[in-house]
Figure 1 (tube, rainbow, N blue to C red):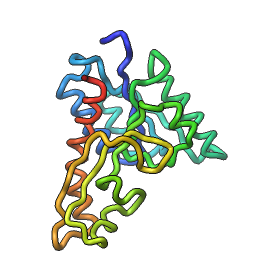
Figure 2 (figure 1 turned 30 degrees about the vertical axis):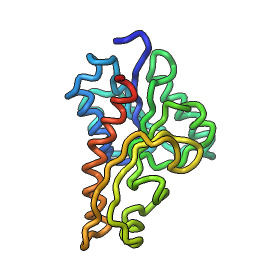
Figure 3 (figure 1 turned 60 degrees about the vertical axis):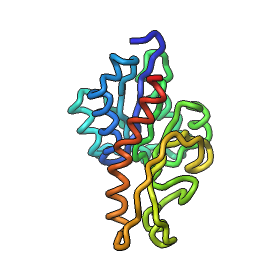
Length: 200
């Protein structure tokens, strides 16, 4: 492994399919051997998040910081930062990856990981920030939708675009059918973007 840590910490709230895609790509493409990058931990704000079971099955360290136990977002984020940084020998992971982590992060958290915090959003940013992206794309008559990997800033779904995938909107699409096709592309572009950040 290189002298500078390239540990990845992934944050999830549910099933963690994008997390699983990154873990699988890291294993199949031998990121650890190629450039010293590895998924060091998976952390959830929900104790029953199904993605934790997948991470444990791959012998990846897991952690839970339940947001319900904190009186403010600032207190939760401070505890989460402490847990994240505890999973790296240098005290600060090379990359913190949001993979279906359903919490709005405070400016202090974002600043702590400035340049090392990435997210995937199910639209072709800058279009359709926020929620219900697939239905909004259909309602707007868009011919194309997609997903975007981007650096995280204090602005919601903002930051430098690292990777995008385009998916056609079909005549009879529902939000669910469009979401399913977009998700297959998310599983391709998110691992690719993470690898490019750490293995160049």
